[in-house]
Image (tube, rainbow, N blue to C red; front, side, top):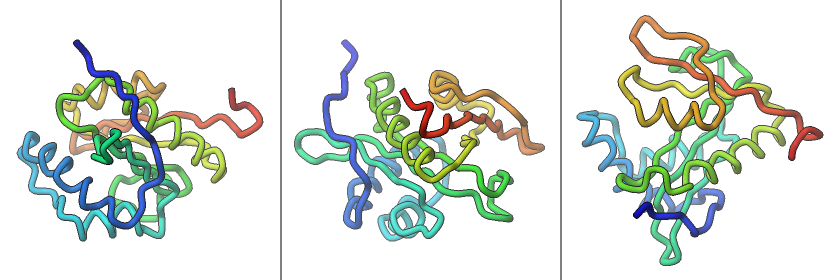
Length: 166
């Protein structure tokens, strides 16, 4: 039976990096990635980043963080080669909780934040072999618009203006 998320979606705050870190560490281990997932790095990268538009966490009734999504404003020379002024999004959900509704609810919050910030496009960059990420972003309405020389796939999603929100 698939778990259906019925927890809380809220803005990340200082202290949440403690719950985000083990979630991200488990994901990075499954990817054989050496990317940093320590709390101090996550605080700086996601919660206190000056380019932050929003960072949202999904937590269960006990306060355990089950996922988070970061939306940042692309700056000139960003690591993802995304056009400045676009949003850059990243989504992480606890392993075993795919298709529980967490990602969809996180994206609804990020899309609202993008609308409020006047962002017209959001980019999601992922590895070509990241089939879960490809499927998730496609389900959220993202379409492939370029593939980098490294093989990284860029998907984009238009953000409807505030007055066109449903």
